[in-house]
Length: 220
Image (cartoon, rainbow, N blue to C red; front, side, top):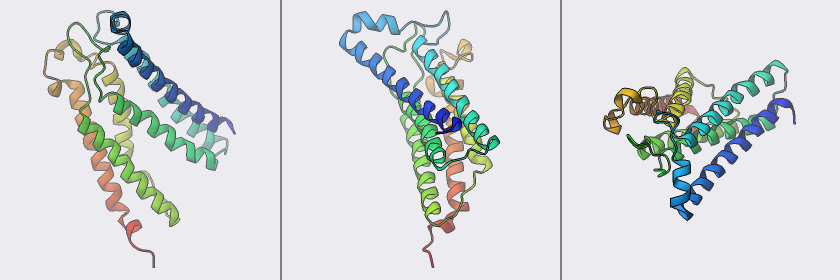
């Protein structure tokens, strides 16, 4: 296992540990609410940022940074391997989709005296995860026919939007929350980012299918 692949694998381990840690916090709060809930409900200073979510945000940024690093090293040192190609998309989808699902669930510990943690609408998560399933299935069929589906600008824009939106949700809309925390959740700045990201995800998915519809035609 070369260095880029080790970095990719470490990203998977980091995500798994993060999810297990969040699950443990939920279990502890359920077992002894009076003791553990005040511990994990602490905000970061006078911000609306929950401390647990802040730690998760830092982990997400580090993990997302390794995505660019492993790809750069693999190309620079000519260390592109089949194992790396297999693990990289798994690491990416695990990182993004697991957090999208987590952020669509109400977590009682992520509270703030002025307002609760912003929750991503479930239908947005379903649309984004569903889009990934469709595109991945299309890529799988294309690979069987030895056709390469190249990334397009819309797919890249979707990825960038997710890399911005997820930390913004984890930080509960900060710094915009200083003036929009009293607004209905659906109209907050963080909500606008979520809706735009969902729209970009759907648009990029439709374009992928249209541009590569020949992959779905029966082989002659």
